[in-house]
Length: 106
Image (cartoon, rainbow, N blue to C red; front, side, top):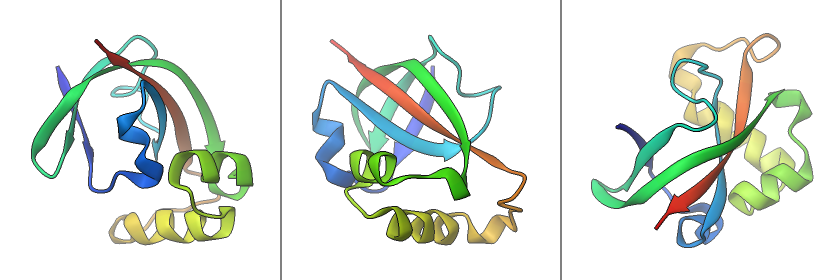
């Protein structure tokens, strides 16, 4: 089983039965039906299953997506994402992100 690592529990979403995460698009890793061990600060929290994915460009990140996922405004969320991936020299006009919906496995 693959691991899904969180450095922050944005919007306290990891406490919910269903929540989202925004990640760089990686079809080999993130696919509907995939199971992940969810980890924060080197501690296992739970297992989760991907139940839906919507791909988008950073310029298309809207207020709804940003607030649900992080609690931040769309502009602040975009800045946070660019900072988080700054060491990868990403062309945001071409690289897509994935808005991933996860369901906690009980």
